[in-house]
Length: 243
Ligand code: NDP
Image (cartoon, rainbow, N blue to C red; front, top):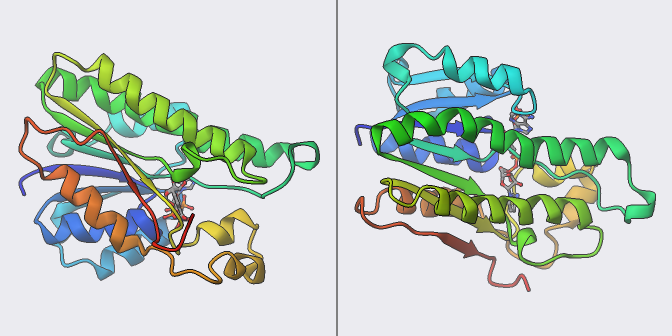
């Protein structure tokens, strides 16, 4: 696979699994996240040459930093073929009337605005080259609202609308858009949601077998490797026992 893939949120979970799948196929990887140490740990697990991976310490909430990071990519890394917009998080499961304002800021700024900032900076190059693929990681939460899900579900409904709108905006080009929308996946996600409360995080997976990050990366890789005239618009994948 002679392509350059930018994966946001590559320091853990689904993003790290995507790095593995694309590295195995011989792609060149740009891996972005805030925790540089974790990104380096991910790279150590990959079967990849050092020259085939480029790390960026990036907070996707920072519009100026995103613009600078993408515009200052070394020339050999600047033609991004596939963008996996994966960076995202949930905070709390509180009723709206009791919720923490900062939790809302974190979710909206990361899941919606961060995804838009990265896309806005990567897309012009794809349109100019008339080639590329944007893969947005949405969620089943963008299709079904669950108790306490209010704002997180709204951010993922926004991702769904952005993916659909983007698809329309790109008609007439060869740039593809896919939304991959998982149910429960066992990652650091629940731990982040409950601000590091491991006991609460573990309870989330009781009584069902969650998806693994590899399950999602496998589907993302499949979507990315269809023939160029095929666009998979949306995939919803769920644990068998999740309603
Ligand atoms: P993880 O917590 O394991 O991974 C989240 C990744 O996002 C980390 O690499 C984190 O890196 C990165 N990230 C978070 N905030 C920022 C930021 N401001 N700037 C840059 N990177 C950031 O969770 P998952 O792998 O599960 O989550 C990946 C995506 O999948 C998210 O969009 C999530 O909403 C979605 N999803 C997850 C589900 C689940 O059940 N786990 C279900 C459905 C969708 P760092 O902290 O180093 O910046």
